[in-house]
Image (cartoon, rainbow, N blue to C red; front, top):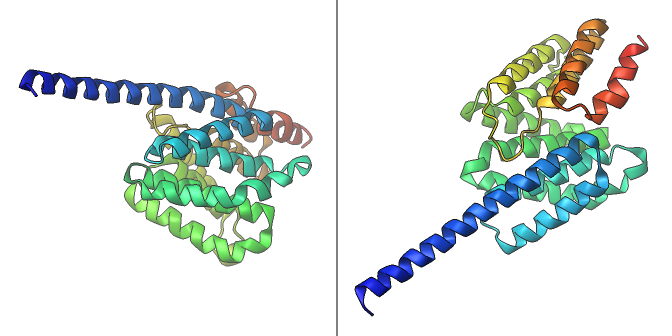
Length: 253
């Protein structure tokens, strides 16, 4: 084979890989926007549809860390949606795969810290589903968050979940409403400074604002709580948790 012909074949192969990679990235960006919308509007039907499409993409290429990360996030979101009394079946359908996929994300170096954030969040949802899980899972959550914080101490999702854990843990076990609030405020500041493009989906910011609001409600400061609720809605006007649950509760105080 002539050298020029071999070089042409090599160049064609390289360009083909580059085009496919670019297409995959574009497709992933498109999916991430739809997943973001489904998550914060609590659109279960859309989230299930997106999950199934991402599962197909991941099955076709199990080396794509971005696809796996987004797939794991859809399962985490479906566990959140399972807290709706009318959708409890979602927990049994997605809990096992949510844990498995989050653990697999951790094995991808590029997403190791974010994978630990997802796994910690999934464990939190398992505790919310059944509080008896707290004894076994709380130490795992704290270990994951400590490991992640050692690598990325200013990662906003890690700070957010540390704040939620501290806020919700009884004082006799090391919890503190005030310390939890301070971590959540720190997470909010980190979100405001974080690059818009990382990670594949920018989750956790709205939840942080919602939890800050709840912390101020616990401090009997509904005016400040409402400020943070409105701040969340200024980012995502259809954030269902704040719009339909937390704000109406605050107005009753």
